[in-house]
Image (cartoon, rainbow, N blue to C red; front, side, top):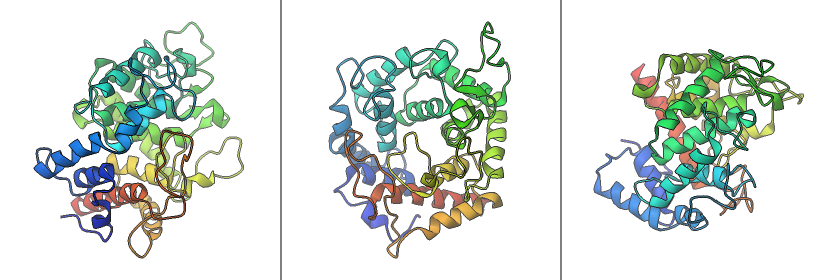
Length: 338
């Protein structure tokens, strides 16, 4: 039974979305538990999920029709990512299915790349991983999603993907997604750890029964990349910068383009690396950031940039606390099972 000083705070009814996710992800109540079902219904009738869905246009997009990457952070891409992180589900509101259908029709290419403009040349790891994660979070079922995961695995391993110079190849890298193992044009063609975390988190959410041998190999390579760089120090290629971004150590909500240490740890824990000793310094750092009441502060946010705000910075935050407790509790479970 999960027990923590902050649990009663997370279960308060004033924030129905947090309460629902705490019951689901921390207490891990069965899917048919009456308390969980009631909390799920309330979370979809009140609060943040409703606020985001009420801004959606009738045909399934936010702000403007199309691939939905811009404007940040209110367009279709970001609204779907936010809904997934809020715990929204297609079974609870048919508008969510319409939005998922819209993004697949306008942002997914024939070879499975999610694109900022609908063409394969505008695919990048962070976008691919974010949307694959969001569609899984939302519970949307579509065979095209399997193709998106297949491309994502190939983009990591390089299997069957031609260099970007081979412009006539049916499947190749591009200026943005420029090579295997998370190479990114925006990171001076070096592996981008932010993109890697998004990709690995999506793989971690994919049920093992749906993982192909190619996906398993991409997971192996990606996990080794993230763990070799010491997550606690964010010791990854910096591209054009002289040192890691300070945002690695600023825990926030929601988590869009920017990646933090919490999301890195979540991806690795979901993939079964919670007991890996190379992750321990990162877990210790996460643990050390809680206050005397067992709560974590909001250190990075999108106030005024998305459809609603999630609390003031530098104060205890339920969303960040929920994220941290999930990571630490599931890492402990993996350690006990080791």
